[in-house]
Length: 301
Image 1 (cartoon, rainbow, N blue to C red):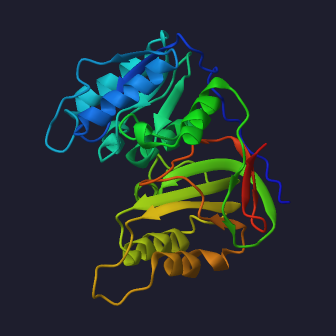
Image 2 (cartoon, rainbow, N blue to C red):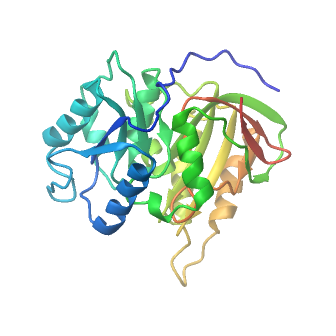
């Protein structure tokens, strides 16, 4: 097993029923009101006090309000010591726009939960030494199977997480800090001040509605930029609706992933249960994990 010295990543205090949580919409404008309400009720049914900001349903083009409004939402939730966690409404696009001249400095670190476009916030937070949760947003949690919902609450309430099993590509065992991401969003962070150091990380990647050639293009950029250097292993989730258009000659998404990743010489697991359009297992960002590329098991240390 490869061992690499890793910087610390602070876990926020565990949540417990009765805690005050703030809803923020840092990316795209909300459209899915019914499932959004169901998502809030899931958290409330677990005993949490969920509050909405005054501008949670704002709209400015494809964004959930102006940059200043969304930045104020996020800053107010983050810096207010009364809030113990931040629940993201949805992904879409726009959270990166909030991170110019942004700082996470706070005496009261708290859980931030989301995925897809929320990758921007999770990576920025990780770069500041604080762990978040790559997991269901409020507009997707109601579609999760019971085990996945329970896993999310286990993650934030301080209980141990069960290993996840996929398809091992070989390469043995490796340990490192888990860094989950939507591939498209993460690719657009490469080379920016938001990109955290990747040495000693195990990437957990997923994506949606990207044709195989686009996945190829992104992974080729990772290769050519040297971004994979120092990465210990890769855990692949779901690449949903990533088929080629009908009638156009193409590799499958599975063939692209094998072609662009299998020769990196690191342990890899595919077909893990996280991402869009299906079970989205909560993945704590920055926590130590072990990836067994032979047995196809991702486990928490």
